[in-house]
Length: 595
Ligand code: C2O
Image: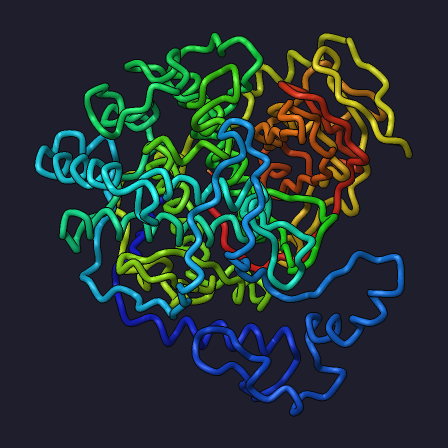
């Protein structure tokens, strides 16, 4: 597969806007009416009264029905984008690892301004395993972090203040301004990627400012290629400001291969290095292949202002990202630093890891022809607050970074490196294994899911037979709708890490062979511990989540096109989990991109 992934050329911006406008118009069925003003997606102020009531989009509809929502049993949903908090109200975080202390100093006189996007040359982020040998760069990077650590403890740029931002926005220190009873959470939804992109951007710009270098970039942990699949050595020198002792010492030592299927409480994988590398590459390939046609599968589900009881839904990129967090953090205690969101950003490798997550999003967008992932103002207008490189408190919207070749608005790009997972790798089980499974004659009856929630059991995977909505779909049908395994009402004990893996196989009638079949994807969640008023740890609320995994290309790969039903197997790896249902559905695609 030869694909030119080049996000550094310019001049496509207006074409992209046009594309956005066109597809939005298609969605609204408004021929020839352009409501969008400029690039920030602020359509509401443009000319709402020109729309016939029948042409209103879903958000306008929900706003109109606001009263109804209030009186019926439905949740209070504002159907509006997530807005930044009122900074004067920072609640103690539920972060026992930090003793709940992650609120920043508050300056009541501080005003919020618009961010002036940088006007630098395109800055190039490079792989951590390559910058290691660039002495000049490494000296700068370490000096910048050293200076950040030496700033007064209450300076917004101080290293630990920067780290605390992450704690504030994932351990419930701030509530939504337009729905004060709902905390802001920047994980488990479609704001995961834009919020973290800005977070990294400002961190990078501040580091550059501290060493007076406008070209400075942070490196990316290139964990999607063989040479980058170990803990980056640049963070392992105990004398360097990039060092952090709170890591899983079994993993950070030289040469240990990162395992994207790592599950904290299990023994380490005994597979060979080359096997783990192949599995990692296949996991990444599958993630792209199965989610290219629908952005939410990759990036997470919508979250809107005021939504409280939503079923959290990570995209598969966030799932892979969680696995890396837990692989780096200490295996016991609070899994510090990387293994717990409240402490994760205290380890410099956090930003290097997220730089690669950000790069994965960039590649995803490139593969989809640079189209905007969610044509929905509740995503585009999601708004965040940060301290910028000029010590200003600024507000930024998701849409502002998107004009239009991914990060170029922020004036950075990524060094082009090989993408081995995009090439041909053998990710399916061999024909040999398959036929062996069928001759073993240990076929078992497998039931449908039934109506009651089921607990997963580590020693006895849950296997269910699930009807497909349609078999032998034509190419065109597949382009219009993607087949998705949906697991709903996932309840986990939030004070421990969770992982289960999902496999799919073709049944023999209603019988299943002993083999789980093909790996499809995973559910991974870091522990999110809560501290009670006595200061002792308490069991957090049982959060509900859902998991959506695209399987259209996978069914082609395993020759399952004409199966009426599939056997879905959930293998619990760590944590305690119940699930409320497993189904297979067809969801409208938003792209015909494929690899
Ligand atoms: Cu906010 Cu890697 O997490």
